[in-house]
Length: 473
Image 1 (tube, rainbow, N blue to C red):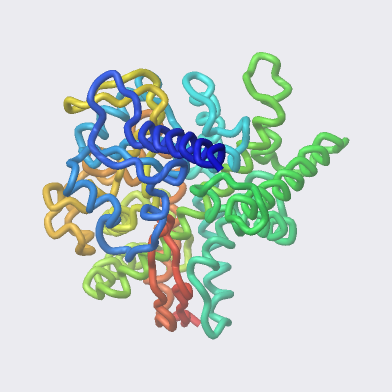
Image 2: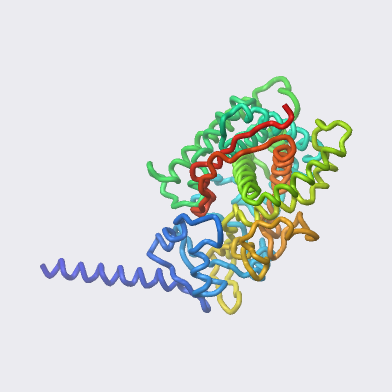
């Protein structure tokens, strides 16, 4: 009896000390205020709870009001300091590779691969980013991708008119994935869709507990990754075994040349992980932004009319009204780019931008220990009344006279610093082409508006379904 009581007392003391140490982490200074939540779980449940699209995440808003612009917490097993301060955010981006480096949750790192883009830093990261830019750089967009995306968009829009209704997010995901799979692997539609199926569960497991057991989001995502990597490696092996050239050079050909060049960093495994992440990064965010843009335009007819007027003037100035969009026309779409900026400002498709602290750093009188993670919160800046008048309103004209194609202290929809998204121009061009043809050649009717929530990823519950009618047939 006394043994049981003694052991129970010892376990209680050990558990109490463990909880105390969890809630009061060691620091050579003053930690930002906040709560670490329960051991291991932290405050993950509160952060991952769904909330409406409009406004700042209640989790962040509540803690900012209570603790200030810097507060500590724990998410999915990681010690995190949130920053809602524009000046601090700017400092973090400027100190990339010095005091901070790119970081993701453990689940995201496992999904993107041990040799993926997310784990490399410094010169190696710049090298990998330059590889991606050979595919999506402004020069390549102008030289080939503009015309290819134009053709594919018109083809899909025409096919969608035959449907009684379709989900915009799903349809545009598929369209973009086909284009990128063709550019990367020279895949036809059948092989592209086979690979596309592997990515179905990827977004749900990207920011989750890294529990690789059946029934969890992480397990489903890892299974999808395994199947996708198998297909990609099969394509690499097939390409290696070809005795004759398969056609025009694609991104895989380019990467394999780099792999075979002994003077480069690239290995075949790194190339495979790079292609795997590239496919996800291009279709997921762009399709979400397109769907949000249509949702906002549907709710704001005046902005829609302004966009129609601008785009119809472009069509009217052509000798041939059916000519594809030219680079000059694309660059002249000022209001279009205002719509895009306003969409991604309100959408905050990337809910957090994470950086790992490389050495103890002092910020605003607090100390963040090495090994912790800082989370830059774009929404807290994008939706701030101090930075934007009537910040929750969709008002593209607020961008009139402002720089439309770069990041700033108050606009970080495409990241910031050295890690500015390499695919930003690709995403914006994809949005512009589809919206151009929608407002000039078609009329759409919203059949099911659904509900948009964050978990923190954007979810389009019941989809955003429209019916499309051609104005030119």
